[in-house]
Length: 461
Image (cartoon, rainbow, N blue to C red):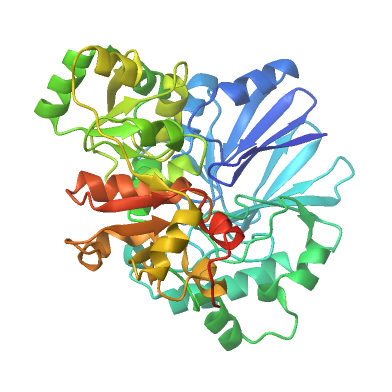
């Protein structure tokens, strides 16, 4: 028996490879299928099944392409209604992988088709569950994503999830291993642990949602409390996962076209494309194409693209570090942004050499900000709610990056103001968005809140 978690930090997502006796199964694959094909090839194994725990909202799965490439059927649990050919399994149905069995446990609540897969070892003992978004480590899946589609309230879904956990998962033995679809950093839950694998027994002790004495009413209250609005792109990803999409090779071929500065500019003007600069923030600050948006590859790239650009049909033109073009297109496709039109060949250097205009971003140290704060300069904090509540500059206005487009009226038009995050990545994203909307009286704070504390600027909780 061979089980491998293939974890992608940018999305905080876990896909799974299971192999026995030359037969393999993939659970919740990412968009690009090559890693799974190569993994099976190393084991001289054939991919027999592709299991989907539910219609994912935060990423586009690779199930459709992988099925075309391998001939393996796509398996969903009860209530799933994809537009493409798939096996809709019954609750309790078993699938054989070599000497192993995978049992379908229908666990609705996060969504109505949500399913957990129970893996039985060669002796027929319960070994592990692949819990999708039903059970995370430290949390459970949010129950508000499927309510519009199913005309059901989040409270109703939470109640259904309570029953699923108590009737299908909690009765399993404590030594059963839990392999969730997501870890800390995913927008699919709110209290996830940093670990990505645990035992069910430990989760029964550590996970607030699995308290043995918890009533259904208490569960519904605690699971629905403090939920932030889901990112706008979530339903668009669900649609792609249910209806299908272009193969990744076609997306890559289109998105990695080399464009000269002249063609790049013409295409930007004629197509309404957004110019997305994915270099490091320090490079963007020094010089960038006017009105371009920064979201660096080295940070939480894909989720921020989804949250801030939102429309997966938006045409995109890329400015990338040399050699990172394919990576950028691939990571965009993971969250459904398939309409990349190409990238600027030679980067900003070629743009400048062709005599075209560039813009820069003003950025100051925390020490400089300290002086400005003493002079009552406006400060805006783009961290999330939890970070802001933990500690912040007393005078700072909270404008979380995820919802910055809702706060545009809060920024002054007639005086210089300063923007910071925790470390300097999100603030540059925020400033680039503001500048793209014609707000240029804005200054980034290098090093963010970490540098602010080191500089001795007073903060409060």
